[in-house]
Length: 65
View 1 (cartoon, helix red, strand yellow):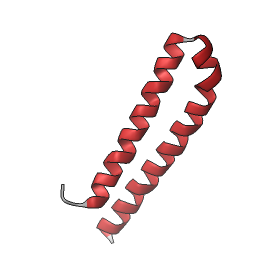
View 2 (cartoon, rainbow, N blue to C red):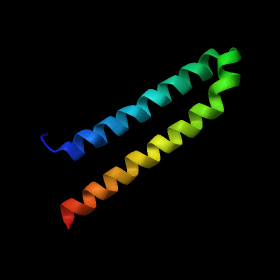
View 3 (tube, one colour):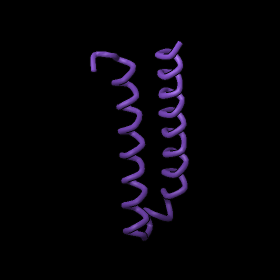
């Protein structure tokens, strides 16, 4: 686990999980927080997932190449 790129991928995946938990928590709680932030959290989660997937694809590409 000494590869810094793997650590970066782990951080990106952790960011996705954190944003997902905030979104699920807001959705479960409902109320003003959900109305105000649900769309922003969904966009942030999609962006974080995109970054994580791109990092994973780049890593696999370099390892195989």
